Image (cartoon, rainbow, N blue to C red):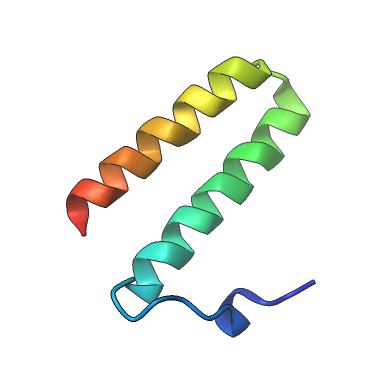
Length: 58
């Protein structure tokens, strides 16, 4: 598995923001694996919303 720090991002992408988003998704997936709170559709919507919110911050 590739470490997050080893991933090459385009020059216009903020490494800290990308890492924050990736970590958030990993934490969300881990929590959902334990709780089964969200079905696949809800997870897709939740992740999509977060990505859109992050893009507004760029």
